[in-house]
Image 1 (cartoon, rainbow, N blue to C red):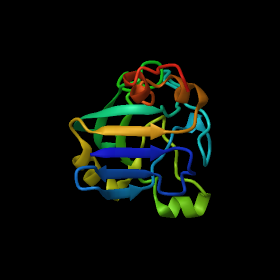
Image 2: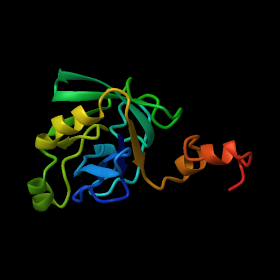
Image 3: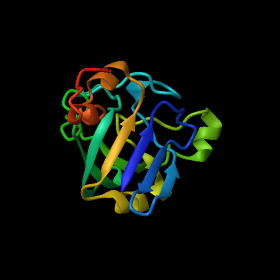
Image 4: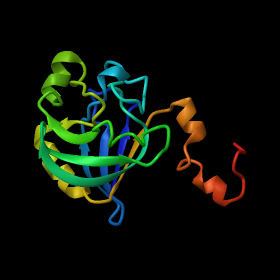
Length: 167
């Protein structure tokens, strides 16, 4: 399973895809929140820092599920030093939220924002979490210049080909 979040799209549009790579099918295409510190309808700022209330970019691994403050939730670990590797420390998790819905998007022109978590519509959260928990990849994208330049995962093909540093 591969989950892709395209933070370059406004939060009023579905911008999370869960893809069954083996069967080449999209299982889910849903709304997803971004951090309140990242911006309003379209996020523009991202952080790995505590208390920034911003979303983080890059590649994450899904971990275990638990029931917590926001109900059924999924812990995720950031795999990119400097960009998202403090996700566990920051308690960035995937969970449902009543503020992430088509009705909220229609009323406000955006869905509710989180403290950095990729929050999902309440009715979609459990099925999505169940389908991706336990070691799947989440790829959070935005055309951030620093991340585009420095991500090891975006450039792994060039490094393998021996052309690291040549863009």
